[in-house]
Image (cartoon, rainbow, N blue to C red):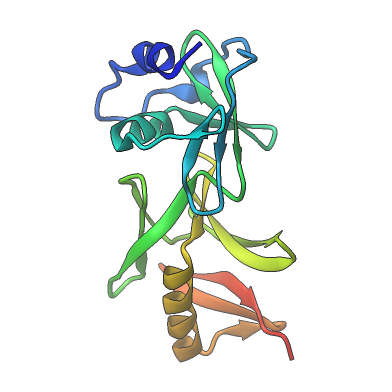
Length: 178
């Protein structure tokens, strides 16, 4: 199977996200997708440079039992992200909270439904956020540091964990080492 075959099975997706949670196709073994810690997508160890194709694939992501898949009504293919499939590349601060913007043209409010949690990556605790339908995102380095500045101004530290307030929820973003 090649990228054109995969693309042809999902090309007719409208502007809404397809109902991947309702699809239970068999696993297709062989194709290998990964997403590195910069958010770059790879197919069989070759970088996918076509932005429209990455956007298309991002719309048919599904997470089952802590494993990500590209899903069509006919098959599912394992996707292995180094951290998470989406990268938070920007944000907008409103009077109520923070709206996150991803590298794959998706945005979400940093609220109770899109809560952050800290995970260990390369022996460093980093925040990730559920961006949609159990699909996670990690913060680009420059966005993370901008959020740290906001958190410092909010002075919200709970048990040596720095938090940021957004939409009435306190979100952990980093551990303070003494």
